[in-house]
Length: 223
Image (tube, rainbow, N blue to C red; front, side, top):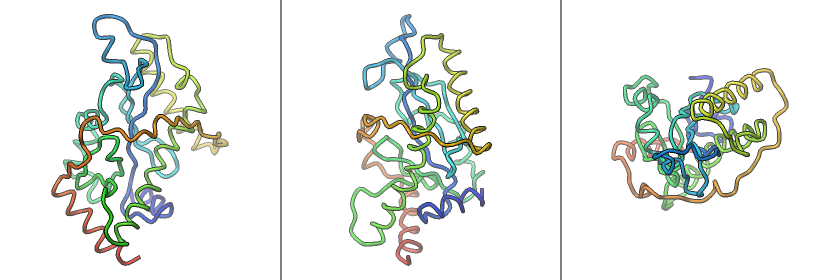
């Protein structure tokens, strides 16, 4: 974890980060049946909502690939083993970076950007968190360019689709380990929409606020 945190620090000078978290939609045909509509995404196509955590090298460190496309990002995280491990203190004082506009709540171990900026230290915090979080967005872009099936959609049964998603993640990591050329990332501008479907902007976990303010006061104020 120390090495991962050091790699993130070199990117944007945000301390103690071991991963950036986000979800992305993977297209597929309607699975049919009575539950088909839960796979309809906010963009009106059928798909899976897949959560991953990326490190600073674009490697995928955690994946959840079993939720239908209508699922909220925060719901996926709340039901993940990753959250349980952070809640249990297994990652000590290391942090995840998430996007409040995607629905992630501020927590003691999950930092999100500030909605209101009043001092320069807060501006530095936001600049650093935005640049750090860009890693997971770039990972999705590179992975989808590397495996176009993730963009074009799949006409397969659900279990096979889930297996393919995980397999492409494994192959993506192998490609990075083998120093294969990184393809130009595929950019889905609709993923940039600031979506607050769950009403999470404005929700702030009190203990998360304390950790965030300590970072601003004790670190970013001294840059």
